[in-house]
Length: 435
Ligand code: GAP
Image (cartoon, rainbow, N blue to C red; front, side, top):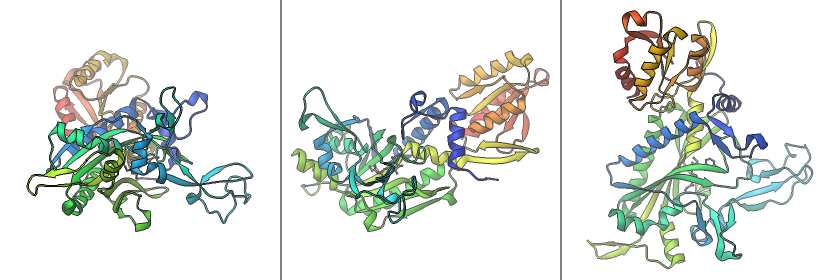
């Protein structure tokens, strides 16, 4: 039975098992910035792979990929509206100097930190990280770390169209880092200052854009469900007019029910032709598309799907986290779908006497390019618990009988049921499980 998953338990498990570390931990850490350990790296890669597959395999047109730069000149962010509009309201407590996002606290009440009610005026705080390129001072050298990956897609729209020889409708997809100077980074990987986005911009004619908006809403919901996330914890919520970002005419969020409430995991936005029109004006370059049939030019509309790798990572952890009791003993288990699990199987010799034979199985399995772990230390029960806690779907134990019958014990993570399988059928058994 799923019980009492809390943010603290997730943070502790991530550190204990090497999924995520606080960045620069030995220097006291950096707020809102994290490093990913071996298991975190593998889990992130599985998320990226699944996302890439889900956006590539659509039957409505081509999708091509881009890897844009992290830094962009001020002109890009002026055109996109981020210089003027990418603000959060900020307020300080004059007594204890704590800083808050004004829309995240009740200013009628006292400061949650010191209990005094001495607020400053609410000010607008731009969330972009600014830097200067080279040694020259002045606005010409001003650059910003990108707050979303999308703008590199818009500024390269014509480059991609002409070199990839794609026709409307088509999509440009990108995975990469984004940076936001969040006033209060919160809830671990939920709101970070440096994070990773997976975005697709789908370019289409205005008259088809509503249909494509509906298509992408369904496609994205299907994607998160296919990752194994419980359907009853997911919902699609259309934005109210006053919630819309400066660039979008309509937007829906895929939300997950976290212990801290329903929160956005992915956003699907109808950006109209806002971005390409803005870049046309600001850069003075023609970004319109010529339609051979009507012999007219038009600026396409864009439907955007945007999801954070890290936020999805956190969602998967919350959804998979389970505490149960097996044979009177409590355990923690991450019930990841086998596809997403960072380690697919563990090979365990029952005692050191079976080391050599078990190692051979481990090495053979590695040859089929699947992430496998080999664990010899501790009692077999302890080793099973370790694998449960990192979400390994199956363990193969080489035991006393294995020498006689050429079989191992396959132990299922979720049911803990065990069955004997032939050593030469292990790879087949595992591949079936991963399907
Ligand atoms: N290009 C559109 C865009 O950036 P957004 O709603 O600001 O839209 C999209 O961000 C997704 O990026 C969110 O749904 C979330 O998954 C992720 N995201 C945004 N800000 C984040 C942050 N500070 N930390 C972690 N993930 C974040």
